[in-house]
Length: 134
Image 1: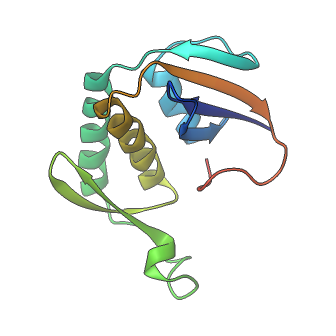
Image 2: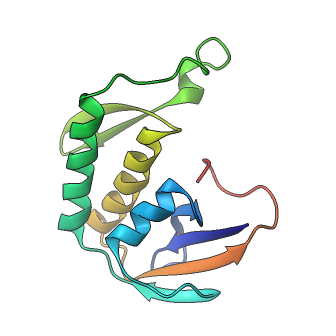
């Protein structure tokens, strides 16, 4: 299994995803790159990311949040992440559809902090990695 890590100019982790995941599909929609191991410079368009976040938030508002498998098994802190996007407080599930929104917001916030340039690092699975499922 391969992963893609998005690193900022200080080589700090901005986000990550598994190849062949929904998050990876989102990454592909944001920029073009050639799949290869090692560091690859990449640019992000903040307006494209902002528009995609708005589109996903609109889509999310049209359907109920589907979390029945998690209720009762995990605490609310384990299931949800609270984010602010353009002065809107969001309560997002850290799996499924909302995970794509969290992925984009993390990249968006990094761009706002002017942490460019960005690099993609493609690696093979070496064990437990990251803070969320990609």
